[in-house]
Length: 258
Image (cartoon, rainbow, N blue to C red; front, side, top):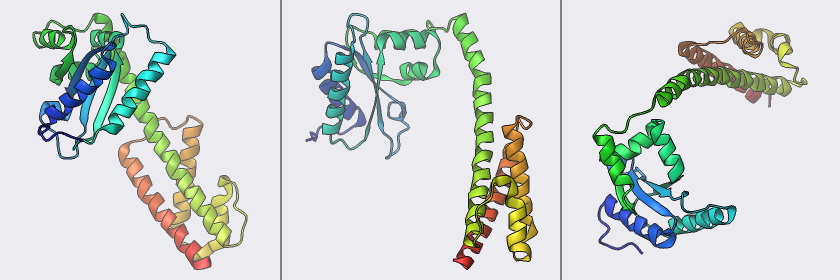
């Protein structure tokens, strides 16, 4: 049962941190509140973001200890009835320090805006002060790694866009198959869909819908064969609109025939 004294988000976070420390105190290095609540920008739907830094330097973590910690933490979270949802992140001391030295933006932000709840032996708070004083600076290697990540993110976003086109393509294929099956035909392979739509529906289907499919088929196969490597967002929006119109047209025929 939640005590009435837990009026603020910090009170709730601190109450939970105490419970975590009491249960796992031998392996806990620091517990801190971070995220929108710590920054003072939380909304009514915001979670309480809490990071638990566990000691993997003086404590040897084997599979049994990991399982004990995970199960115990999950049970502890499940038992709480706070007014906010808890979002718990656990990181080892080694990983936290490594990512801090490499200038990981997530770790830097946790340290910059985080509020220490439990800081056994003084780990989180001194680092926070050093960061504020400008004493924690990324290594040249960290700068190089960060710069190297940029092209990877660009490629990932590019592939995500190309993947979106593939999804639109299969939406057209599936809906066309549904319409053709409703008309009593066995669904053909995608390369024959355009001709089958013309053969089966003829003048009962506006030619533009067949052209939409032909355009999408050519584009999807261009992507598959590596001939198309870049698509702009505006083009994806146009393709999505055409796909929605196409699917709706196929749905109209299915409804009419079944």
